[in-house]
Length: 228
Image (cartoon, rainbow, N blue to C red; front, top):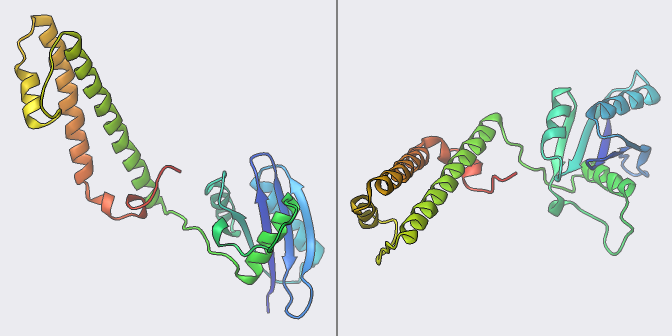
């Protein structure tokens, strides 16, 4: 029967604090190590190999690492799983934590994460697939077009105001756009406005094309925040 080994990781951009423990029913948890290393996933792999040497090469362990969702995003998860190490990202608001005031340190946080991994006191963060990530990038691209369209509208409005042209109705309706196209201007002003309107048409067409694309409706990123 495999023995269980859980490694809690309190991770920051400057360091990782690692705590390895073996939960034992009816006994105190066995804490094998609680150390700090530089922020490189290879140090975690080395930590695991050193633990195996310390605990005996003949012993079989079910090893799992975990860290709280935060500044590293999915990068450490992807690095560890690619190296064959089981890893989860814990949702901070779901973790079972000690009640009352306590001194917060990296070592204690790493131990708390190891305990959550051992006894199930957490919910794991959804890990996006490569397809999810492609949808996220697609949505970001669409929003870039929206930003560009907003800027063009501002430029057209400013051009009209500078030369005394005011539209009384609701702007950026079909009637407003038709009014812009029919303004009687000096040739170079007309050419300037026409170039702006060409950019307006191009960005509008891009946004409509992107919004109609069916992939937007097939991913969690369409429903939730994708700014990560």
